[in-house]
Length: 244
Length: 53
Length: 166
Image (tube, rainbow over all chains, first blue to last red):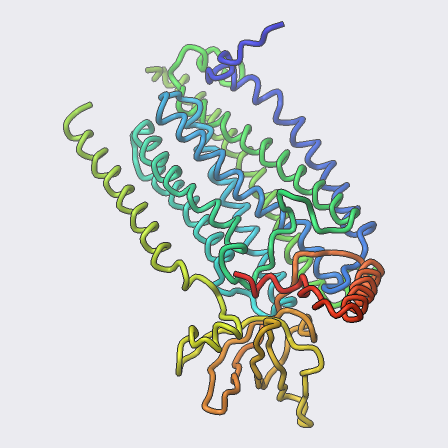
């Protein structure tokens, strides 16, 4: 059976679909968090160099990965909205920004709490840390710019430009530990493989997937409100059961 | 049990990290739910006032 | 599009293009200065700033750590396996400070050609494994080094020195 994908780019159909999917993502995320936490704290062994402190990695690495990927997805949606003038893509970009910003903040916070006992400093102006801080500012800038312009379509366009220009920062974050001397260690997850013990990897990947599912659930729920807000006054919104 | 929470002296750092993660998840979930409630309320108000554009 | 809106759009596009160019130029200008620290070889080649604070990074040379009897002052060498830099530091060292491990020290190179550090940070690598696996790896590395020495082939540079190769 052929699925008409374009059908789902219409806000009305996507609204229904998102409403159906969000709870599934939320619950599977919660289950995977528990699994990841269990493996991370009860199965994964103590690290030879860092002792127990390395267990911060199981939340730090997923938060960092998500903060970068969500930015790229957000910029992608924003670009789609800018080029094809599709309403839904701009709404998705707006819905992704707060979650991405929170992951960026969590990445910096857990990084500080990991850096203090291991490196001896909460914060260093090193290329990796600084570029991740810039990522947080880009998210905040995107949200602020979007909310400062009253006309939503113009807000979409202006914020989209900021998102697209800012996306150069993402590869800089990833490769910073290669390009420059940094206090931050190199990437554990490389294109060529992962330098980590098996149980540690299982814990980390469970947490990464859990964070993805969480992000999808939250963003889908948020985008539904944005759709309703921006489509109010249309026929399909006024016919919705939940607004009666 | 208290050994587990002490994490060999790194408890503050580890639970400080996971604590904020949990807090963010709870607060963000509450916020998107609240936003949905408010949005639906506003739509109902608009309808009741007969202000459909 | 009304002329007024068009104008605003141009202003936004112009501002963003300007911002993008500024970021690009700043990054280009900082290309070499973004690095957090200098290696001992760079310091030896006088690439590090003279007479003011900078950071030096590398490995703590094995067997070089000497603690003064007062218990606070520490002397050690930072090495990038090519050059060594003697360092003197008074203060608390991070948990991960160990011989043969990564370190970044901030301070000043004084007349005595000793680096007087005001802050010492530990740098760890991206490998995570349980102690047993680490022991096995260390043993294998030792065996290889011994075999390498026997055949008069220089032992491979420790993989823990990604800092040295820029």
